[in-house]
Image (cartoon, rainbow, N blue to C red; front, side, top):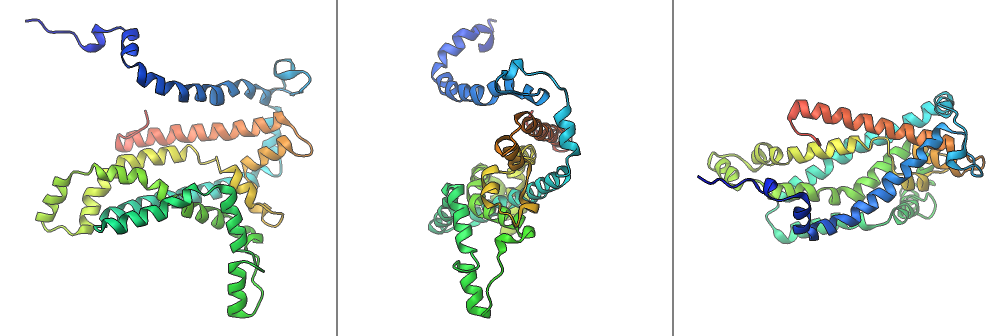
Length: 312
């Protein structure tokens, strides 16, 4: 009996690449982008351990070890910046992780196709609004004098409204909930795709057994999207320390700085502020990346042991 060898044994690597050359061409551009913008810049990370001087260059600058890491840890701003970063990140993670799931499950329950598409379109559109425009809209609406909020308070109470944008404790709420409005529709797409692959026979069997629509969501729909949700949670945990620089920086002002100064804005100010120090800002940025790396590795391992679902 003549049993042919598997395809991987019959064909060499070169022949397999040639046969799927069109797919590899599609892969080439993102691969080049990844190398240029993600891996090549890693060469510059060594300035975190050097007294970097533009005139001497990266290679010519003298090594100083962990001097700038120690400086950051001893800085009186360290604890405040770390707490601000974690506050905004964990708050955003706790809210933004569940709302797209709830939205996707709700849309999946709609039977009226026109209503469903209308709601999807309305919730998707804010994602395409740029961050600068979004912050501008927030500033205009919440302006205590000429904004919608200010005029409404003035009309109802006859008293000038409080400047919400100047209240430090209000910053995390404004940052997170404007982000939810902007991205919840876009974030629900991946869960809608997962729900589309839900086994309809399970739904039919549940209906025959007398299960309500809510019971089918709990026992059929949620288990269907659970692996996807776990993967998304792992990825989100790996970005806990990466609070969006652009939006935070645009929403900052002198009044809310005690709550809005996060690691990303601090790095920017240390690198391009009045007393710019590229080595110090690189050290702070590296600390941020290392924490993210440890978090994603830890959460991935926990997920693998608990649910057998992981990134690797």
